[in-house]
Length: 359
Image (cartoon, rainbow, N blue to C red; front, side, top):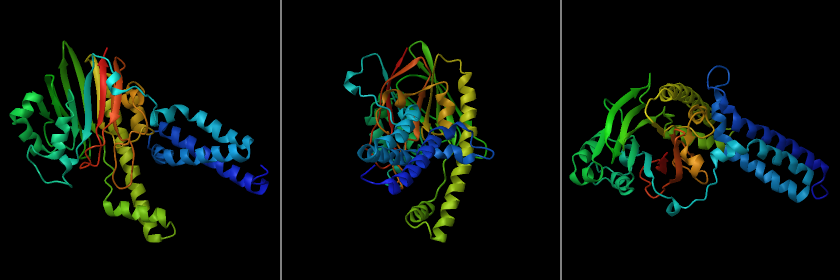
């Protein structure tokens, strides 16, 4: 206390208390459905990494200057412990230590097989080649170009690696490469949305694995809007940028509300699933501290939270770095090791890869 004095310490403590309360809200606000009077609660998780960093800085400050003040960040960290471990799990098992038997699955939003960075629509497409090189047992894709998928399904070398290739029927852009027989392939449409879900049944040995390969509502933010938002962060007094940031927030609120309904639709179907094993995966466009995530986490296991380490960023464009791609498994599936592969950057997403065991 002597180092900073009461005139400085108490105002700083007040700021710390405010940021601590905001951090707690960011961890638990998404328990409320993004409808009615509190639609922004489900977006509160977006601020989590920044608020946690502020809280940690205060912890270090108080430990160096006034140890009693450290009680505020310490208590806050304890209150937020379980959500923090969902967001930033700590499992240090090495990939080569995983014991058989297991199967490897992947979920990957390919952004049209990297349509913004390359225009190769043949089977030599670098994103497609990278996906195949992962050599997973089953790969679930979102934003998979139907033209590329059609060519891949007709390529002998690819068919030798993945005998079972299915694109979701209709206009859906979900697809699957599988080394196991696919016995059912359907599309689930979302009302008033260009996004959707592919429903698959896959035969593994004598058991059936049901999969919901999802692409929940996109945020539909234009690059110009994101740029304006970044400018607003730099210069919050600029009225032009402020208006743009309000538009961004409006789009986010509308999108998160749509995702909530879509998540509930898939969750209701998944809860009544008759297959022995169940996976819900894909691009959720939502972080681990969101309502859509919680809908599935209530009755399934998040493979990354159970067997990954770190933030596990899957979206990496526009200076927005979040884990919005997830793999949820039924309780009789054990995630052994899950990681994010960051080698291929042509898509705006990285794939989530998980070694799982069917118990």
